Image (cartoon, rainbow, N blue to C red; front, top):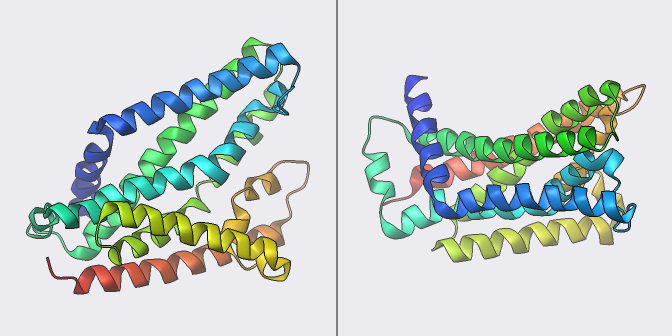
Length: 245
């Protein structure tokens, strides 16, 4: 357990020390502020209601920005390290490949969580500043941000799996985006299979908003997402374990 903790710290440091990921955090923060200001001074002209700003931002993040960011981070932590040989220094440490994989995955989750925390705070502050929120809605908004992390996990693991089949970081990002789009389109073209695709539940946090939560549906989705996560993790680990560096 201690080796995983150290691994998480090391991998998180790699991410947060890179200039592009610092800039990304700043840009997402600026985007959140811009959406709030535009919505407030245009009366919702761009269909982003200030009274629901944190949830509107969350929808943009989970459907578009976070998947793209995940593909970039995974490519840097896996494919790029394999490409430049720095992964050799990692696997020679007294830590198993399983622990390395878990450490990198959790480090990516931490970065994603930092994005969610920043946007949650900005969105909430802007709502309060412009007098568009109610105290009773804050716990629901917070819950929405917390549960939105679960559908992100299979996306991370799928990207890690793809990175093990890629020769370099650019191909890892390209194939991750391509496969993600194919999966997403398959749910749109064939509506019958959309309920079985993990990407269909990026907005599942909406189930937690309202007077009554559909417990049965929530448990079903959790089982589906965990099943996908297990499959992708098993495939990624099998390839990572067998790979020669």
